[in-house]
Image (cartoon, rainbow, N blue to C red):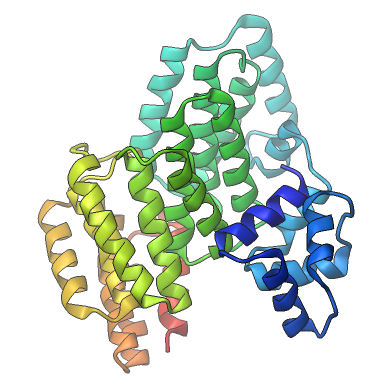
Length: 369
């Protein structure tokens, strides 16, 4: 995606006209931009320089690295090699990629089996484990991108890979989510296109990171299809979290109610896959959202409902619920008590079970007002 298209999409996600974006930059930085400046950027007639990229980053609430990445894009393979971690060094990745090209690699059904396994393992394994293994799989699958179904596989793998980086990093997680969306479009499968964008939106919204991108991807998912699906459910709930963090509680509550209605149609019964949203997981989403809204009654009800069905094999999610309660305590006025409660819950979880999302949640509790 060119820088112009990205600026337009982020602007549209906020419901702003080109003139409104110019005004926002002018107000924040004392500039004298008009609508034509924005139009020229979006039509790629002019590429915004470093100063204007910083302005856009601030007013559109998107990491600067994402905008800079569109000005100077890296290739898919160099992205993988740059972010892969030991023991899979770049030479191993390159070798694996060429071997897959020469020998054909797994079948589509074989890839679907791999995806199912990673979806289950993601729920209990640490981010580093998943990141190391999926980086190698991405190099393999890119050598087989000759059918729409394999583009769908690649898109879902890339989404999972993005989840192993904190959304607040921006230069990694967000770029991978957007690359996954582009790959999903190559598949031509609307269900995949919606799921990839929705999963990214709920990940960023839940983490409270890169909210402009969360909104943009959620809006894209909703525009692609209004057919009930887990992807659309994720998109709605991700957008709800973004609204709550911004302080737009009315929109957040409306979206939460829409998400609950969507769950009644699209919820799943699978319990231990990142590709599923069973009843307990829906309540984890609602628990944090209600805590951010200051709605303690709804938050506690969601926490109790989640605990009743949460599998014992997933202690990390039980920790999420306890940390949501810490956020509620902090938001009620006892900031230190809330932070202590959340820290105790986090420390009770074995370190190897910790996730990037839990660490971001801990920061949110500590910084809550």
